[in-house]
Each structure stands twice: as structure tokens, then as C-alpha cells.
Amino acid sequence: MSSTEFLEGLKNEFPGAITKIDIGYGQKFAEFSSNAAASIFNVCSTNERGRFDLLEDLLAYDSGDDIVLVYNLYSTLLNHRVILKTSLHRKEPSILTATTVWLAALSYEKEIAELFGVRFKNHTTEIPFLLPKDWQGFPMRKDYVYPGGYSGIAHGSGVERRKR
Amino acid sequence: MESFEINVGPTPATTSGPLHLRVQTDGHRVVQAKIEAGYLHRGMEKVAERMTWLSCQPYMGRIDYVSAIHCEHAYALAVEKLCGFEIPERSKAIRVVVSELSRIASHLLSIAWLARTTNASTAVMFALRDREKICDLFEILCGARLTYNYVRIGGVSNDFTEGFVDKTIEFIDYIVPKLQEYHQLLTNNVFFIGRLAGVGVVSASQAIAAGLSGPNLRASGVKLDKRKQEDYEIYRKIDFSTPLGATSADSFRGAVQGDAFNRYFVRIQEIEQSAVIIRQVLANVPEGKYALTLPRVFKVPAGEIYVSVESPRGTQGIFIRSTGEKYPDRLRLRTPSFPVLNILPAVLESSTLEDMGPLVASFDYLPSEVDR
Image (cartoon, rainbow over all chains, first blue to last red):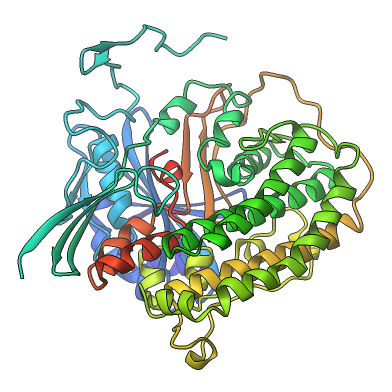
């Protein structure tokens, strides 16, 4: 269980930054504070007990209060996985880009910036990405209000979650 | 030399779906390449938030329609794990058989696209002809030829139908010797190798950094296979190997690890391995039920989970966040072609216009799963 050891080590190294360690369904989750992103990313990729060289997935979800980013890290050298999470204020969510450590974050961050409105500091490439260039709002947020139509084409009102 | 900006796409001949490349050229060299994705964006992740757990299932096949089984499979696995369902042994075996059949079909289509970009039109016909046989098998099994909705939460939608097992074994007996024809037409063909060798080289470290997975990663020599790593279904009990990109340069006139030729070569070897898996599983399918009986609307315990399976294009991952309701709070689709976007511009920028077609096709990039 080297990823558990790694997380304990990480917690000792950054006592304030790692706020919670959790195991659910056999997977290790750790929550970190977004201020410490730079050092946490660096340690994850370079620490010899971690060596997380593959960012398998980076996603966001809207928990209702915060925008939560989930970094799914895998080490191809040590074959273990850890899932890092951080909560950002939904008013002006921003965090340092992970692209300097894992190039893989490039497209994921573009997607999250567009769909959730998270600003990634020092991220260079252009957004929009998946949506049309004139799209308004951040569709993946829970408080997103569906537009009545697009480009003059109205669509029906069946947009509320169906009651079952 | 005058510089041009050339628009390739949005419907180029290199991928099965819309992909738009804006290419800045200097003569026949590519100086800069920009990718515009999103033409097939259907907002699947948003749609899923309004669906019940069961009604999400048919949408999953539409994410990656070339091998619809794998996304359905990942979704079913994730929900089962959250609910703590233990599915019958028989359904596990059935899932492995259909996964591998689907893998062969997808790789054949990928080889067809690739051959088309090099004008090897006989190979296109061969690959599509053989893929058609798998579509027929799926039609016997579940009535659908493309998006099956066959793997369900708790098992599969129906048991093996009459004649399916015999016809599948017949197909395996047919395809394995038939691969020799592909080797004659493509693998050992000087012109085909010449078009692909040394094109779009991605080193192992570059591939990992960009987050590539599946055959694209293994062509660069990184041995990473979800079927071996993640203990899902009955893959642990099956004896099969994971082909890697060839290391010695002289085995195929100038092909190097991580180039377009090796990405092709890994795929054609994987077809053989899939045949090995299907034979082993069909020889010993456990008796019993093919699925659990579940209500049409059910609640899933609150929790977060990430599950991944090996799809023909790489890691098909699903992240689910449940708040204990009848519908998912967040359904994240981590699709295998998506990370190709990270590396494709850089790889294109060191290539030429005539190499662009085979280069893009060799990554087996599928817009429908990138855009979702």
C-alpha cells in the first residue's frame, strides 16, 4: 500500500495543505488546499514514493457550495493510484495550472475552464474548446440557466429535471 | 516559400467523424497545427444529470459508437461497485466475450481508416468485410449492429442467443488465419511501411506526459493494460499477452518505437490476442444467471468512484458522484482519445502535409468520444 504511505508522508510534509485523507471503495482520496497546488503537484510527480507521472483524468464537479477539482493520478512506475481533490470558491474559482507538471492537463483544463468557469493561472492556450464561440455561461454548473434557444432557434421548455 | 493556412476538415478522411485542423504550412512542411474539436459535442455529461441510473445506460453506447460495449461496460461497473452488487459469474464471462469481439471490430475499422489514408484500398475492403461479420454476430446476440445497449447494470440484457457461440467460434477460426492476408497486404508491404515508418514518433516519456493510453501508449513501449492492472471481470484468470511497439529498428525497414507503423502493428497483434481471450472464455462459460434482477428506478448510495476499462482506444474511465438519489449528481466520462489532443499539434508540427493523413489516422482518434 505504497500510495497510503505516500499520502501520510505528504500530510507530514504539508501539515496545513492536506486537509483530509479518505479511502472509499478501495481508492485513496486526499483533499488539499488550492493555495498549496504548486508544491503538492511537484511532490506528487517527483517524490520517490509517489512518482505519479500520469495524470489519468482531471475533472470538476459542482458540489452546490464549491467547484471541486479532482486530479486522478497514476504511477506507471509503481503502479498505484491516488485521487487528489480541492475545493474552489464558486464566485471566482482559480488555481495554478498543472500543465507545467503534467502536459496531460492541457485539454482537461481547457474543458473545465469552459464548462465550469474555473480560471487556471498560467494556462496559455485559447478557450473556447467544445462549445460554440458565443456560448454564454458555464453549462456544467448546477445553477446554470438553460437558454431558451440558440442562433434564433428556440427549443422547448422540457429542461427541468423530470420528477419521478 | 509562401506560407498558407489550410483548413483540413471539419470532415477529413482521416477520422470517423468531424475533426477540424487548421494547418500553417511552409511548402509541404507543417509549421503550426491547431485543432478545433467540439463539432460533436452533445453535452452527454449534462444530459446524464437529468437521467435515472438506468436511463443513462443507452446513452453510454453513443459516446464511443465504434466500440459501444466498452463505455456501457465502464458505466455498469461503476454503478455496480457503488451499489455493492455482486454480478453472476456467467455475465462476467459474457461481458468479456462481447468486449473482445467489439475490440476486434474497432481495430479492424481503425486499420481500414489507416489503410485508406495510404490508398491501400484492398485492405480497406478486407477489414470492412471482416468487421461486418462481427456486426452480424452482435445482431444475432442483441439485435443491434452499432450501439448495442447490451451490457446493463447487474449483468447483460440477455443470455447468449441460439447459434451465437458456434458462430463466434466459427468467426475466430476464420479471422486468425485471415490475419496473414493483412500481414501480406500491409504489415510486410514495403510501400505501407514506407508511408508509416518514422512518421509521428511519440517517445515513451512524451506519451505518458500527454496522458495517452491503450495501443497508442503501448506502441511507444509502455506496458500498461487495464485488463492486467485493474482486476475487473475475469481477465485475471485469462492467459494473454500485451503487445508492445517493436524495439528493433531493422525488423520493419526503419520503423521506430512510437511511430505510426508501430501503432498499427500493436493493433493488429491485439486482434490476435482478443481471439485468444474469446477462445479461452467460450471454452468454459459458467452456468447460471446472466443478470441480476433490478427495479427500474433505484437509488445509489452516496459516494464517489472512478472505474476504468480497457477500450480499443485506451482507458475508458468513468467517475461517478452520487448523492444518494435516483440520478447521478456528476457523471464524468474520461474518454481514451481525449489526451490525443494534447500531443497531436506537436506531432503534426514536425511532419509534412502528405504524412498528415496516416499520422492522424494512426492515433485512432474518434471525435464522438472526445466531444461527448
